[in-house]
Image 1 (cartoon, rainbow, N blue to C red):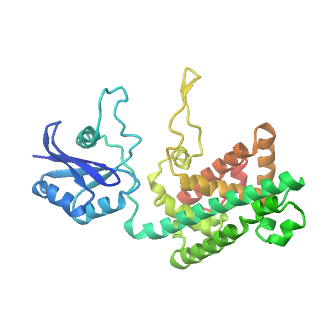
Image 2: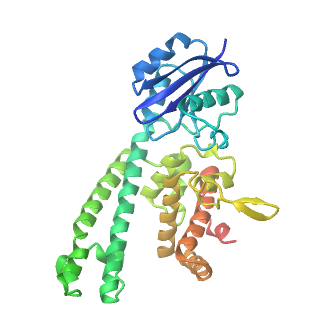
Image 3: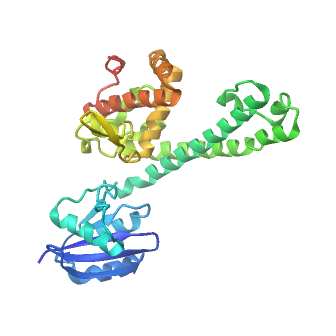
Length: 338
């Protein structure tokens, strides 16, 4: 008799349900987040279990790795795609776990990608780096805005990174206003040091694999961004079409259309936020260092705004990068701006 298991995972506990073919419950229980307890609960059904569907949450590593190491067939569920009908009158953790097991039995469980365990360390290190870069950028923009408000002058981010308390005092006499800017100099310096540390460690431990080496030929993508993209993509073969890759990078619109009319929007956050950020960074660097990218950005910005224009260029770079990775060829700017 084939059995199917669904696990609704939370921060401190999980609901584990085992179903027979169909919807008959064999066993179910709420268990604390203890791998030994969960394995013990499943042990009587080990030989009959066809698979285990685990909800993809922020803390799935320990559970999925532990179940796989114990010899179970694990399926990481795409949580957004596995939602139950929203018109249900009542639902709880028990019903959610049953739903996962039921979808697994039907063979229509929407699955996420289980990233190789041995490569997650560098990937998570690069994710932490991008987090620090974004924090530093927010501090720099705050300082730039405050400085412009007091002086009417626009400072470059590269210049702000080199500022001292005395530099700010030359332009702003009010000590409180000056302190409001200089208080962020220390955090910016500290963040820059940590970013360099993480970059050095990532470059020491990782190299671009053969199929990703041409990524650095794409405008705006250097070694660190190339590694970030490689570790977030994993295997380019899992994206059958360029549109799916661009969607995964959050570079396409999220909207519902019927008869040519807009009837709503989908889940704009569906996809990989780290790839979205990486290609936006690449677009910024491309505008800074490549004239054709700059002209494209300026044309787009004239019709809309800077954010939309950068995202449009990021979309183009994401699509170009897909073919660079898939076909293992150098970046061709002529194809980008056809």
